[in-house]
Image (cartoon, rainbow, N blue to C red; front, top):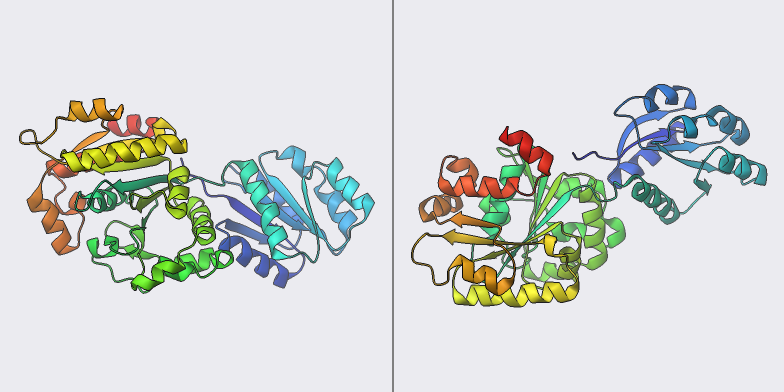
Length: 379
């Protein structure tokens, strides 16, 4: 189950506490407490939902504060401690190491160095990437990959915090699928990789009220697609990974640097095809490219859309033999409900909850959940 990284701040200076809290929040962490002294830490650290990160400014008396917290690192090993001080005295540093502190930052410190130290702690906690990334890729135009991405995201969102990103930067229609008119787009959080933060992201996301799904739309102007860059996208995915349980990406069939980074980062690369020769051939070429890139087989899922029991060009078994991959799912063809969802701006899984198409889409969404959760839902 997804758990966001919780943090607490200890600093005698109120202004410093507020500034640090804003920085941590913008980095995607959840600040659950700010305190002037470390006296309250034992009760907080002892809670089941206690913080994983504790940031302490030792000033104004570094050695005295160190003595007051000396028992905490060993008593609460699940928490990581990051200490700061204007006093860079060998005795202070030795004492910090002795009590088990791994991160000590002299003040004043550039923001970049603080961020790097914090990221090391995040990785140590194993929460630098928490959201499951579902990367949905079309094999040809009109194969319905956007419909699958939007419906899978809408199926997950009511029970699991989910974000849908439109990475079809020119033609994308995720916002329109939900009848949303976003004020901001992915381009607005991409001007500089260093400026992508939690506050900007909150402003850019548009929430579909009925499903609780957060949507990050494609740029309004085609020329704004050039503002989407690798560093900004990497920073964005890091923040989303600590904020959401699932990130669904409506993407393109591409191995250009930006899309290659998504292919490597994804937990599931979902390739959407139809049972016709052009779509299957494109799938075979792309799957072969993914294998050359070193993408693990378990990260590649192939889904057939608009499946009908009779009248296909190619049998599913032939596709499996050609690809060397078992087809993950067959989504039934249902033109009436599919076009109705597009026209009314409401996903099929909500507009026609009892249809065979919805049943297939919901089961596809469930297949991305941990096995334990699937068993619990089936019980």
